[in-house]
Image (cartoon, rainbow, N blue to C red):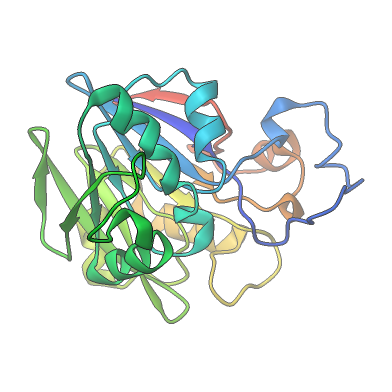
Length: 254
């Protein structure tokens, strides 16, 4: 299985106008972060977790020529806004794209992209095949996917474990029952927004504590605000086995 980070950034704390801070002006490409998403590939199948506002560019940048499924963690705009652009894959593949999410996510998609679900659909709109998931594991392309339920302040969010890979974003609390689902994973990806306290995201210190609680062989932090600091500076101070993810990072997982 191959995991490629399409984006490791966040809309949280990011200015909508030009910013002259050291991160936003850094020449290091690892400090340039699109909205968080990963591409997971196995058996010739391509799966994307979340389609944020940068989805179209991420697909073009990585030369993705087919897309078999999308898993959604939750319905916030920075994780779903790019879904309309799956229409290019519909046209290329001549088929719907399978969409996996909770009932709440599906209801949000049906509101946001109502034209894709209307009885009389305009030619060229996205063709989406919705699959409702909850806490129960399910099979996808021959592999078991285990949903991990975390809380994003008061909002339930799903992470996903696929074999030895676990991906969680927008978490603030993870109870012991859900943490047990993660134990034994070799690669853990978890959000680390910034250093300062935040109501709905792990801080850097909280993410480190959680990573050490799980004890994966390697942990990568994602959903990173520019407030966290420069990539090289932050990573140099992290404990052994813990790293900052960056856009374009690729991992091979057995």
